[in-house]
Length: 205
Image (cartoon, rainbow, N blue to C red; front, side):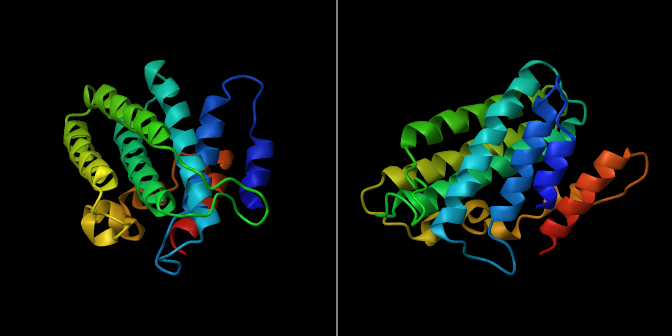
């Protein structure tokens, strides 16, 4: 409710992309696996998938239009979002249920996964031109996503997390993004502080 309230209060007529990307990031934090909820329902994994795919789709537009200022944080967001996409797809790909009890579709397609991976790699490659260590994240994500695709396409795999790279299988332990977001409050406008407070609360659940 607080996240929806923040979105409605900070939706400008122009320059909507930054608000929409932060909305998707908030939804990802709400539906990701975490310490208290290491496994989520299929509906929650689908919402994580939708939010992460929505985030990287819009974020690529920001990056392509040179609308990114904090490059290191942007790289972290793109990398973590990519891991969330891979994790959610893995959880949903082997389910036989086509929809949730309320009619929400749980179907995910490999074509959509491939398109999302292209967005993540494009973001990381562009940003790595402005931050040297971004190249390491780009290379690491390329290797991780390739390994996951091998697992998905391998006929001998049936959803066993043990076959996945640790970053994807143990997504709940990834904390570098939330550490950046919740560190330090000086020099921020009231709207940023309000959003930071909401995110910090979700990040430490």
